[in-house]
Image: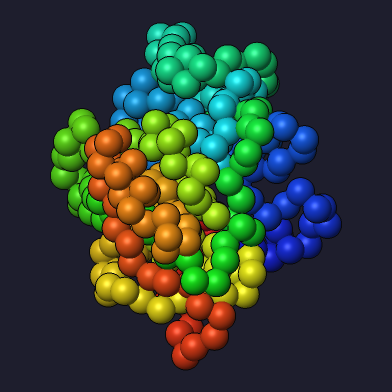
Length: 274
């Protein structure tokens, strides 16, 4: 059973359905970054932990064409965490937030057995990009090169070192691309649970299926925590979307067409949260 989906389906709110809740011109989102669920302390410095925690939260706002404005941060701190550790962690959180024009305005701190971070982002958008905007005939595409995050995570589990530039440590958020391409898109989201899982979610908003334009390997489709963009747009906008991707130096792969009905079944995917 997908417990995350079960829990979400038990909630009753018109604002649920995207990675952030859109209330007027404001978007509200929250993600957790927990030790031994999302990372191990022996894998990362405190600065890397704080930076990635903030990046994965801001990713939701960027993917929905929103500007992050404020952040609330809750920390659970184990007793062995030192004041130097706290300084490094806070420096990473604040510096990363500032990189995107966001300010930490509060939160909470508690004692815990492990290092847990929970962040709420408040963002603004006059034209948010929703999942529900997907239309029959749209092309589906993803940005970047997928697969490296899963590959490097498996290397870490084997006790191997990975590059400091690894996407597992440092997701790339496509701010400039989204700013320029939004008006040509119908729907989108970030890829946090893997291309397969997130494509299923995007299609489910309107009950669509897809016709694949190219095969997607498991190494690409099941790589979670990529934080690239999954987007849909009408075929008439293909050329301008490609031009913007080229101008902003963003690799773009068009992999499927949205259809109302065919024999395609959902991608097989693995839930990353339980």
